[in-house]
Length: 464
Image (cartoon, rainbow, N blue to C red; front, side, top):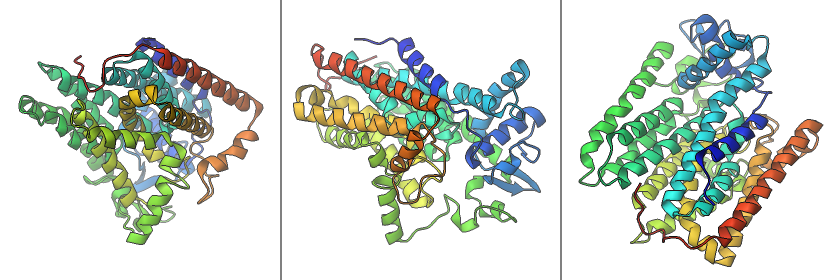
C-alpha cells in the first residue's frame, strides 16, 4: 500500500487542525515568543516593553534598558510573517483575540511544517526499506508516537528544528545516493540545517556531523559548497545576537543580561552555563532519560531506535552506515550537551521537550528493522507493544504540554492522567476520537505490512 505525499500531509495537517492549542500564551515560554511576534508586527522592534505579554513572561532579559525575549528570534520572525496577514488581513490581534491568534500562528508556523516533515520521513524510510507498507506504518508510529507529536500543537522551537532536520536529512541522503551528485541537494541541506541551528542553537551540531556525508573522495569537493550554504543563517543568527544582546553569545547563556531586579533566573541557574558535579550529573541523567521526564519512559520506542543504530552499524554489509552513523553521533551529542549543560528538566513541560527535536531523526533507524519485525514473531510483538505505549504517551502529552502541574520526580504521564480525566467534555471527546483513529490506522497498517509481499533486502542500496 503506497501512500501519496498529499495523503500524509493532509492527515497530519488535519490532526494539527484539531489539536493545536487555543490555550497558549499562558506560560512564560509562549508569552515570551508571542511578545516578540506582536512587537515585530505592531511596533517593528524586537523590544517587548509595550507588548501585551510583557508582564506575563519572565523568559526575558534586560539589555540597554529594554526587555527582550530570551528565545532565538528567527522562529518569531517567521511566525510574525503569518501574524502580519492574520492581523491586517483578518483583523485578528494578539491583544484582543489572544486565543484565536495563537492558534492560527501555531498551526501555520509549526503544524504545517511538521506535517510536511512527515512526508519526507516517509520518503526516507521508503528508500531505506523499499517497502511501502512498512514506510506507512513507521510514519504513523513515529509521527504519533513521540514527543514530536505532543509538541506540534504548541508554539515552540523544538518541533520546528526537528522538522527541518528531517527534511535536510532527506537531501543529504539523496546527495550521497545520487551517482552524479547534485549541488542543489547540498545547498538545500546546508541551508535547512543552519536554519535549524538558528532556531535552536544546539542543532548547529547537526551541521558539524553532516560532514560525514562528504568524506568519500568523489564527494569531498562538495564540502565547501555545503559550508557556504550554511553561512547566511549563521551570520544572521549571530548578527541578531549582536543587535538584540550586544554580543555573539546567546542571551540565554549570558549571565549579565539576567542580573536585574525581579529576574526569575540567577546567573548561575541559566541553562548553558550550568555545571553539575559527577553525582548530580548521574542523578540528573537518570531522571531525564529513564524516570520523571524520562526520554525512554515516555517514548519506549526509542529503545528500539538505539538498538537498530547499534546493530546495523556493526554489520559489515549495511549500505546506510553513513546515514546511521550521522544519526547516532548527532543525536548522541545532542543528548549529551543537554544532560551536561542544563539542570531544570526542560522546565514546565511534559517529558523533556528539548528531546522532541531528535525523536523523528532517531526514528529513521527503525526503518532497518523491517525484516526482524516482519519475520520474527516475538520481535514483532515487542515492536507493536512499544509502539502502542509510545502512541498513548504522546497523545497524553498533547493535552497540556507546557503546564506546570507536573510534580517533581513524578513521571509526567502519571500527573497528566487525572488532568485528562477531569478535562472538559469537548476535549475528552476529541481525545477519545483521536485515540480510536490512531489505533484503527495502526491496526490497518500493521495488517497491510504483515501481509505484504517480500521486497528487496535492506542491505542492498537503492538510488534515487
